[in-house]
Length: 89
Image (cartoon, rainbow, N blue to C red; front, top):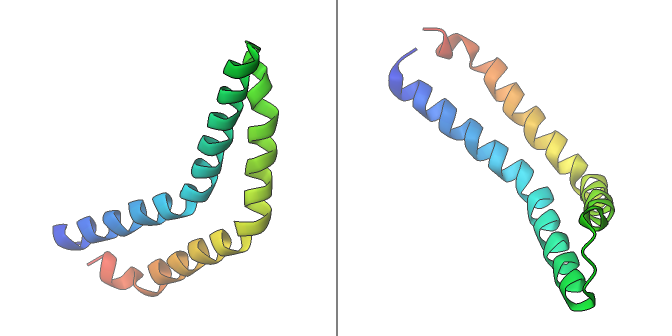
């Protein structure tokens, strides 16, 4: 495997990881920010208060985007399997 093929493969893999994880991370960030603002406004300093809403929001994102996530990963795996002979040269 030449270096340019390896770099391209690693770049595509990292892009897929970022693309697949972005919806969950963004929703978690937004929910955490909203909970933090509410905690600041109400002066509630409970650290575990943001855990359950984040967990539920990530679960909902997985429910709605799970099919797209699995499809993206499966397509990439098929690409890797189809081009395996190119990668081992």
